[in-house]
Length: 147
Length: 147
Image (cartoon, rainbow over all chains, first blue to last red; front, side):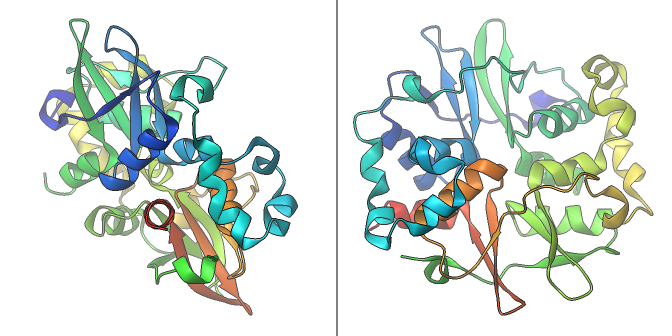
């Protein structure tokens, strides 16, 4: 079994997609994460759901649990408004990282190791300069237990 | 809205649960991760799905993409067998980390910041020395977009 047997179409967002729209896509389609594509429709970044969430959390609260606690309920519920007007481009992690991207020949073991190493519950599959789709952790686990 | 409004019962595994059983639970119930409890039924570790997957990948392949690629298909499909006989206890990350655990009073902002910081798509909720359940990333996102 190879990546080509597990890959499925996966929605993408662009660098200019509003953060609110990206988060809504994640919520509505129950996705494990998002593929951010560049102008050539190739993966520029792959964000696990928790890192999409990071886009919605004000910077001053991310590393200060005490501060997030004292901000009262009304403010906390309103933090979505902080996402307004921001695009995905503005929120990508600055440091270059290994992207969970592979090709259709990747083995199950390779997919699993890549997901574990990059902590990404989805791997984008690229072939011949085009994005084919993604293999999700769930798809991989499902196949591991049905073979 | 607080953690108490978003928390739901969540299955747990013990330190002596076989790794195969833990991975199967994740696959069968489509969970974002697992809560590993200690003898007192309190969270000892919380493993995102990708880190449960790590338990299934032989150590010698985790950090060597080239090795995972050259191992042929038959071997890759068989790597589940490497999990046989191992328990969750043997596979937990050695270093102590901040656990994504909170109490029922946590605000939405606090939950979001905790998930983002610990890269965990689930947060365990503990009250009065007992595990109440978990808030998942999906539950949090769903509520963010329906308020």
